[in-house]
Length: 165
Image (cartoon, rainbow, N blue to C red; front, side, top):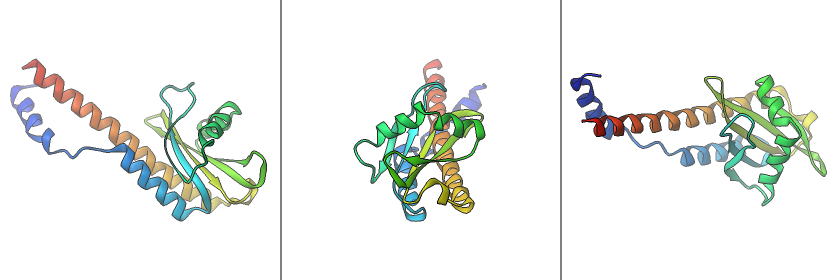
């Protein structure tokens, strides 16, 4: 990279607004609960493909929601969602009148996390239009994750350039 390009990057970098992943995901979970017939939802991040998801944020979730997400991972529902590239609806444990929907979050073929929604209806009662809406919301979470990653990469590059001068 030339000195002029480095100077230009340094001039632009301070003007790039900070990307707050937490705020973006919180807003998205609020939106999920307004648009979907659900009583709880959460977003969990996946560090490596074989790791269990780690909760980033949730809304209206009971204290054991993280355990529920772990069970979704253990029972293969998370893997099924990633393999199919589509949301998967499964019955809630102990409550046949509700279900859990797992939507995979990916970017550039990398697993980023999952959107988990506890719906007020059984898995069989969730229709295709609602799944489409859930997947649209999941894509928004993907964009938020990807933007946060890109922002961190930009900051890292900026720091490297500053220290190399």
